[in-house]
Length: 395
Image 1: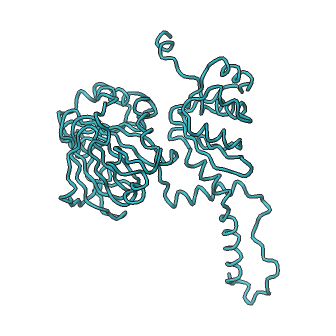
Image 2: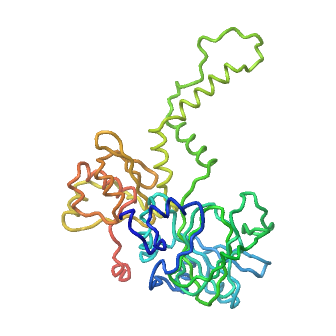
Image 3: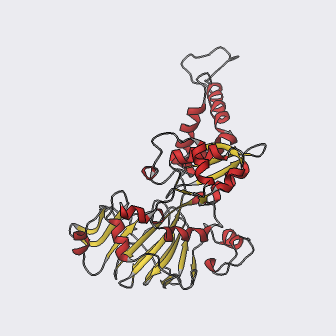
């Protein structure tokens, strides 16, 4: 995609203009971002997902049986939905793109952003009045209206430590002042982009209000530091330790002097300041699957020749739902292919192909080492054979 092409998705901005002037800086309302949007999911289908095991779902009731702003976690059953009132509640289902291919296809419109930055698509349904209260998110989000209408009110950038309502399982802001110029009702196909930390409040205006939230990964500094330190610690040899050769005699044996602190600081900084290790850690972290149990590793190792034969006979491998891939260039046309938290050293062109495809056929076998890489991905559960729905139904 050319960075100089105006995009309807971005309200006529090019991707370069959007990233330069809007991304992480200010909200953007985009009318008709998805013209003639065909909602890929019905409220009943979303409720069906919320009833399944291992799917993350929440129900938010503004006036629940046990008090205001009651939050319940799935899986739910038909009785749960049967008791709900006609208004003022919201159903939220996480990672719907992992289960519904038509929802996953929406992500292809956001390829002007790195794939490894994408988190998932959460889908919500709410009858009139349904909301989760005024709040803020610590990540970027595109809010696409799928059906019905939702009123969005913005309240500006809010400090991380802004007071929240206590005693409930939601981070609702105690104070929310609406910016009169940022008060809109979104119709199907309209989309609102919000940067991190921007206070917002969305309230359903219809009995068929469905919103698709495209969220992004953004590790916090404390998470990153802890994770990187753990990763580096696993790479260090036991012999790499604090040393003080050449030090002068201690004037006071009980003192922890500046020279000792400088030596310790130097050891830590030299260990941390390793760009190659940073790349290997970051690639693994940003491709970790949202739900590890979605991957189904092979029970026994697969022979590369068997997999090659199947591909040559016309079979096609596909990425597992929720699998994540990225690549990082190394020297001499090599790269690390990151797949679901793992790193594989392989041919650079092969890594690029795998990271940017959804299906994998025999054409990949032309790349050096492809059979071994594809077999490893297959055995780890990152790739698999397509599921034949008809066969499943017959079974």
